[in-house]
Every structure is written in structure tokens, then in C-alpha cells.
Length: 257
Length: 154
Image (cartoon, rainbow over all chains, first blue to last red; front, side, top):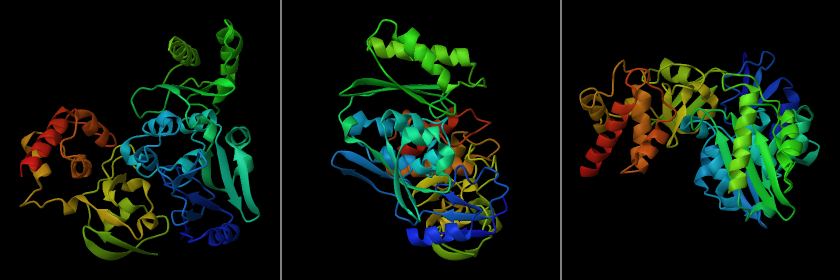
């Protein structure tokens, strides 16, 4: 990446103008992804730190998280929402030096689906708020995961966590080589009025969310077949069969509780 | 492009290329305590403190630092008058090759500015972004514990 131009727009109008004028640009949030990846076509960086996307606030029970909120901000916010799950998950998103600059929006947009963030947002049925020069668009995170490329070039401004999980009692297990390493498997259960919802993620492209049913054959007939959608990778963290076994043990641990 | 920062308590204006990383800028301007290790944010040798938070300067574009406050290892004691943390690292044998040491010292400084009596878990968390390939961490952790004790008794 040979950067020839670096901009820090002061408002959204300036951002949209710069984006339009510089089609080969990359949006820079924290920098932990953009700064170390190679983008041969990119010659312009648009740094969004001055766009005011840093707040965390509660509105009618929903939690609104600015896209430029760092993982450290999320930990320090000590949100009681969903039993503190957001802070708990954030504490595993890399070592402290990364969490101090990496942002939740940057993490989602960079496609870091092998981190814990996307499974968290999928588990909580988060809504992603995008803006473009044609207006604002609210996108369920499940749609974003299914069609990521559709949203390339749009600016993620905030993430909304719905009030229905405000008082949920979550179950969250991750298996990883170290506390802050990329997870071998993530297993999250949250409950709402419909029942329990299981989300499984890993160092993979796509986490899955599954409605639990108290059926003796749930593991065999529902959970295991759906795990195929996760497409566990064969990598240094283990073979797909090993990762599947970890998920089964996490499921059993949740069932016992 | 001009980068206006307050670095080690002094207001300065640096000129940087649009794609230049903060680490390269700092080293070019003489702040050589920040080391180039991995260049991917894994080792913490390049760590500096920005607005009170420990970050990897290899992962930050110089332009990101514009308007912010930076502290480098050069502001933490001198050769003749080392900071209490630096003295303790030497006394505890927490320094071998020394390449990771500036980052370790800054990580310790951030921790002890916030927590006067940190637990071992807090120490490990504070040092989680800094790798040492020589000492094996036990002596470093001991040095942080001893530094905290000394700073409390001062």
C-alpha cells in the first residue's frame, strides 16, 4: 500500500465528499487491520477518528455503541446489559495494546469473523447502522454476515444492541490457546421470550445462530448439522473434528448448568 | 503533512509522509527507545503511551497521532537518574537483551499509575501486549511487584 493522501474529515459531509473524490480509499478506524495489511490499489486513507463515533449510550433499553469505540472503552464502560457479556467478550479481543486502539466497528468491517465480536453481535441480534451520501441504512448483523460485500464502501456509524437481551443471563465459553488468542471455538447462549439461542463461532468466516429446542435429539439432529455452516478450518489451532468436539463439550457444559 | 503533538511534555510539529507509521516518525526524530520488532502489533517493542493508553506505534499512522499526547521511554528517567521502575528491572534481573524493555517499562508505568498495588492477574494483563524472548516473564513480573512496593513506600 503506497499511501499518497491521508485525510481526517471533521464531519460526515466532508467524509462523503472525500470518499467520492478518492474512490481508491480505505477507511481507517483504529488501524490494527489497515496498518498491517497490504492493499495494492489503496492510495488514500480516510481516518474517521474525528467523526464523533465514540459514544456508548442507552436509549429505551437499547445500547448504542459508536463504531469507533475501542474494546478498552467497552470493558471500561462496565455495561450491565446482558449480564456484562459485551465487556467480557471484549476482554478477549487481543492483548491490551490492541484493545486500546482496535475498534468494534473496524473489527466488524474488516471481516474479523475469527474474533469474538461477530458471534457476540449475532447472538444479540445487533443492528448495524450505515451511512452513505444517500442516507442511513439499518442492517441486521445476520444480513451483513450473509452479504458482506454489499456493504463495502459504506460507513458503519454505530451498532445497536436490542433491549430484549438487557436482562438476559448469558452463557459464554471460548476455547483458545491463550486468553487473548484467536478462538478455536466460541459458544454463546442468550435467552429471550422465545427461548434459548445458541451461537457458535470460530476462526472461520461465518458464525451460526441456532434456536434451541428441548429435544433429546437436538445435538444430533440440529446442532451438529448446523455446525457444517461454520466451516471449521484445519489450521494450527486444530482440525475441524477437534473443534467440533470442543463445541459439543461446551454445549454439554451449558446443558449441565 | 504536519503532525502536531505533545511529546514527553513538549509541544512539537513534525513533518510526516501520508503513509508513515508513528514508529518510523519517532525513530527518525530521535526517539529511538521505541524498537521495531515484528511490525504487526504482536511484540510490543514499539509501545508508546498515547493519551494514557499503551499502544503499538508500528500499527498507527503518524496522522492518527496528530493532536494527541505521546509519552515515550525517553521521558521515563535518564541514564544518570533512572526511574524507580527502571532501577527495579535492573535489580531484579528483568533485563537481558533489553530489546523489549522500553515497552515493558512503559506498560508497567501505565499499570502503576492506575493501580498502586496490582494483583498478579492485573500485572499479566498489563503486560499482555509485550513479548520477551529472554527472561521468561517471572523476573519481569517480580520487577513490577517490587516497583509497586517501592513506589508505595515513597
